[in-house]
Length: 353
Ligand code: 9MR
Image (tube, rainbow, N blue to C red):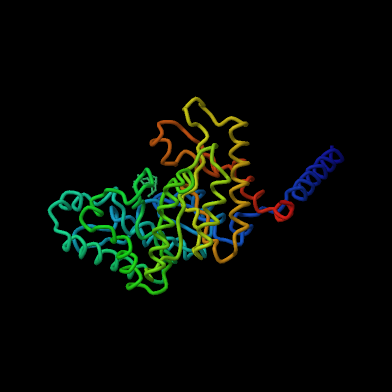
């Protein structure tokens, strides 16, 4: 009997040793890349230990999905509340992560008091309010965030020109440039981004953004980078993506893939993520990372995922169906898309191209 239990223990020991030996050491995204990898988070979820652990281990950059927007910070005309945003900075500091600020101005989701009173402000009053807000927020986070999206989505959806928002109506064509100047006055070092969606899907939108950049650069208006939101589907065009990257790099700007999520369920036909869709998503992720990784080092700002887990994505509500658009499943398992990201960093494959 003793003999038998000796062999059983030996067997178990061997299984453990061999098992450990087979496990390759776990490589986290932040260690695998030479550019920051980011995730948009809701600080309330950081109380979930596993969520916080994955965010801390895998990512080297954090964006507040919502809590650094005016809707959360701007309490009344000249009253600001920073506690939720500050909690993100505290977490990031504890995990040696950079923070990207999103966003100083956006025509959507304004604080309710502003939404209610904006029509009654004359242009000068509104401009002064926005200037004071931008400068207070930038100063508060000076040295704590590396970058800001100054104005979010100021170009019209069809890409043809300025969006007909209440800001544009009251403040005119030049307001985005002035907001950049206000931010720069408040912090000489923070990087300033223009952030928008459909930069790849709509060539006219890219052209309008590039014309804005050229105009800014010809007038010495500060701009350091472009945020390409990357809310995309499996039909994403890699050729158009490459063209957009090249045009931004030509202008000496940094590229932020700022809000990456890849939809897999455009018509809502799937009730779970199929192996086929997961594989397509993985391959697309690989090609995106490969092209991004080939940019000159100084143009690679960060790749930021718009959420951690599939079930937390804004897209479920927005499209009315689950889209499984992110790197991690609901129970925090790494998806094929995660492997696809790592595969895009493969230097040997890159050299073959
Ligand atoms: O994901 C964000 C969602 O939780 C918010 O309800 C919504 C409105 O504030 O904003 C979403 O994030 C948006 C981002 O701020 C700007 N680009 C589009 C994103 C998806 O709508």
